[in-house]
Image (cartoon, rainbow, N blue to C red):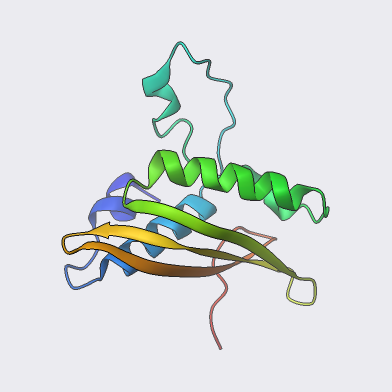
Length: 134
């Protein structure tokens, strides 16, 4: 996935909620290289080198749920400036479909102020891509 297709090539008629949802989906699909970048390089920590989510969410251990939610909140705070508030982040595993559904509730900044948003994305644990509805 190219940077341009992920961030710049969206239709003009998408709502802010849809744009943020697409960005969250891109973040979840992007596997982080997990490079250790120290605090002395703050710009690198906010670069595409650190963008993405480690594949840890695909491992089905119950203890990881809290860690994954914390890491996802951190990544969204760094890479999605339109999210003004994240009131809830939850994960729901579906073992029969071998997928994880991410639910994010909060508020986004828009031209009219702040709007409530709910983002639901279901990704396969096998390939880290969205499940097709149907």
